[in-house]
Image 1: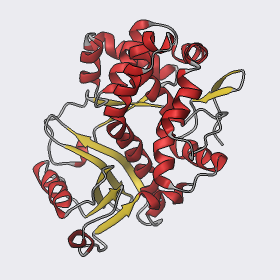
Image 2: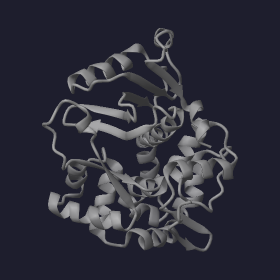
Image 3: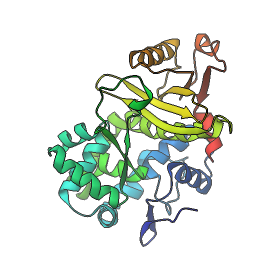
Length: 305
C-alpha cells in the first residue's frame, strides 16, 4: 500500500503519492460518481483534493468557483507548501501545465535555459510535484531521436489545473475578478481534459491484458513530427499502439488510418491497435473490430473503480 504524502491545512488534503488510478478510484467512490464522462471531467480539476466533496449535479464551473477561486488565498498557501513559493519553479510548472509537457517547450514557455529548466525539474521531482517519462523510441527501428527529450507529468490533476488556469492569472482571481479565468477555462477545457483521459486509458489497458500478455513497458512515443498516445510492449514481445480522442464526434476510420501511418513512419513493428473514444465510433470503424483492433469508450473506464 502506498504511503500517502500529503499536506493538510484545515479540511484540505492534497495527495501527491497515490497513482492516478488510485486517485481516480478514490474520487469516484467517495463522490458516488458512475457517469464516466462526468467523472473524467470533474477528476481533471479536483483529482487529488481528497477532502473535497464533489456533487456532479452542480455545474463544474460553480464548483470551481466555490472550492478553488473563492478560496484562492487559502489554497495558494497549501500549494506553496508543496511546490514552494519560488517564482521560477512556478513558471516551469505553468509551462508544463499549459503546453504539450515536453521539456523543451515547457522551458521556452517559462523563458529559461534547458540547463536551468532541468535543474528545476530535478527539484520538482524531489518534491513529488511532477514525474517524467521518456519517449519509447527504443521500441522503433529509429535511432535518431534524442534520449534527453522527456515529458513532464503532474502527480495530481488538481496541481496541473492550478498551474494551467489559476497561478498564471492569479491577480484577477485574488481580487475576486474571475472573468479572465472563465474565458481561459472555457477555451481550453476540452484540450485540458484530453490528457487526463489519456492517463486513465493507460491505466485501463493494464487491466485488459492477460497474464501472458502482461505489460512490460507502457508509455507513449513522440518526436518532432509524430505523436502516438499509447504504446505498449507485453511480456511476450507484442507491440500495441493506441490513440485516445476526447472529442464530441464519433471516431471514424481515418483515426485508425492515421495511427497505422504513424507507426509505419517510425518503423514500429505493431501487432495490434487500441482506440479510446469519448463518444463512440462510426459504423465503418466498428465493423473492423477484431483481436487486432480493440475499441473502448469512456464507459470502459468504469473498470478502474
